[in-house]
Image (cartoon, rainbow, N blue to C red; front, side, top):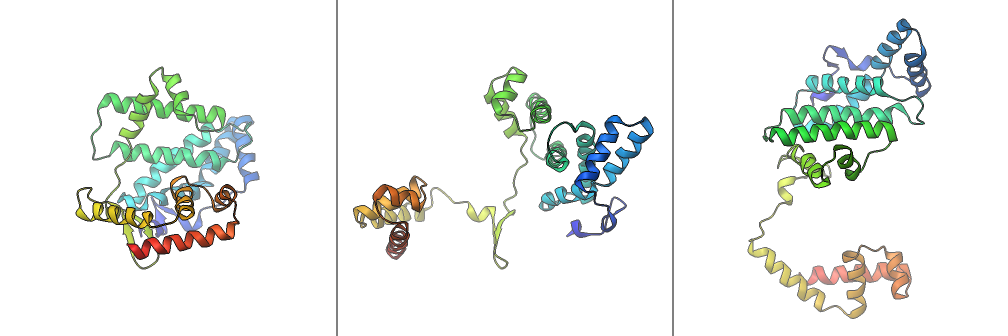
Length: 260
């Protein structure tokens, strides 16, 4: 994988420095309170000392087919923005604030070079919403809700949702979603045809299998898999122990698998 190579953008990643949290706080304090020369030196040290953070973030985008050098440069822009806008008065680690900023910058880059075309007005709305989101995140030390972003932009919240959805990068059908070390499951493996005859045949078989269960077994099945309750919650509701619920649940699933 290209992300494992030692040199990215002329930077030897194996020799990148690592700053402690105390050192980061010290440099950030100097950037805000030191002399101009001290501020400049502290800023440069802060940037070089967090390049490993950029490297770890861009590895999340390893399967996008993008050039690691390009993503690293874009990630560095996000890092610099995070450093320049970080509020030392907030009781938060720099990495907690910096990682979302770097990710946001990379995602903006990927959106700009997206193969799916989005109207300029919708893209402008999305950019303004992202700016508001970043500002409110900085001010409140948390991600704002859709309602808060919509209120700042004075537009319906539905428009914010549509704008965000429009700029989400498409997922490749060949993107892996699970791997146990041998067989890999891709997105396309989870897609099905609603008109496939096997779908309604399986549906009929499943209904018949459930119909053959007794009342208590149906109740457990409904509470566990349709209402999402835990085994402990099911046990309390029907008046038996959690161990009994676990045993009955296994038996129910075995019966259904046998019928299918």
